[in-house]
Image (cartoon, rainbow over the protein chains, first blue to last red):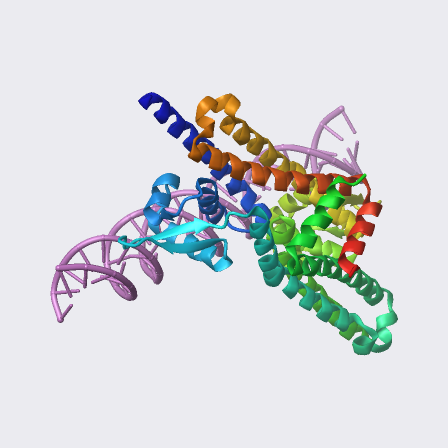
Length: 184
Length: 184
DNA sequence: TTACAATTTTCATATCTTTTGAAATGAGTA
DNA sequence: TACTCATTTCAAAAGATATGAAAATTGTAA
């Protein structure tokens, strides 16, 4: 009986390790740093509220590193601080809903990355437009560049509009995606 | 007249610089390194076939760095080598179609990142399933983890299916996305 | 075919980024 | 208020990325 329990414990830890490693790779997909991703992965798969020491021990990373990355995770909204009464330490737990985590990350990335890019692109477009360049805007080099900037702008605006709709309603997003993924 | 030409040249270079900087930031979104992104950005916005020396001069980066990153860009398929007769040097030019570039990058990332993640996730699921754990799979800690792995698997499978459909046909992808982005 | 010259690639070194861990700060208890 | 335990900060170490000159490659001419 005792051995069985130990076995289960070991196996679970083994699976968790695989998961953390997986999440580490997933980091680049979500646009968060590998260590930040590993910490979040551990919190997600364990489903528990863990202390800094728990995380340090489990992932073998330094206290400072855990502290920094937990702050970032809380900032992102993927993890929240939890207090246990009678315990002075802080505990941390992850969101549990995959879709919620996804939309959270997506909306942050939109704000942090896509929005500034769109702003710059629009400025580039303006600087290549006839209003700024006058007659010279008609010359090949300017026209070509204008066209390429514009194509990109159209593309990103589309992505942006899509994202906008996503964040307005999880439900409709889910349904639309599920439809798209399955329909023949 | 001369001054006007110089003005145009300067202004175009100025816009190109902004664009390269923008693309540099875009790198994290596409999952390619900043320098690789900058080089690609320059090739895209200039629309020309440039030599290594052109790129070194324009972006102020070393020969080795340009060489390495151009190889990667060619590997990714975003850039192709061009030969000019009577010139020993190699030139490089970017794809021009934004959608083509996007699907190219997306398909590579799917293959390099999502596919391995799905493989690992399925293994994790198997290792938590009743077939592996026997009666212990019913215990709380195992069941909880199984459920979380499974939820993630469902989510990623959906994304994967969506991507699959994308790569089968650009046209249908475009239409679907445009629909989704605009419909009320 | 061989020697030469121009171009590209490689890799040891230098630069920049991330992580560590111990000291400083902060927060809760006696 | 003083003490203890927990968290944050930051200078130094480790790791990742870029540089540039030497090695390899490729094309040209004797």
